[in-house]
Image (cartoon, rainbow, N blue to C red; front, side):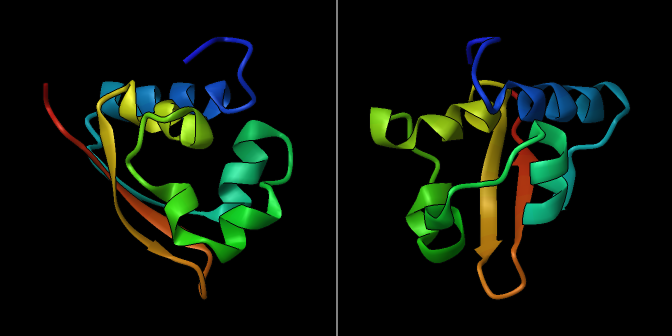
Length: 89
């Protein structure tokens, strides 16, 4: 994840959780928007594949958690939240 990516602050947030011994978290979409200091695209609220554990160019935002050892466990579009788990490498 490039430091110039819009999602880099999310990577840093997740890194800090691990440093503090937190290996599972649930974040609301609003919390993520506060972390990255911008709105998520409309697709994030409509399409669960936007949150996939994919490393393709189409889903490059996923690198913000995958590159730091996290995986998406569940996404709830109705309640606008995502469950993430740190996977020890």
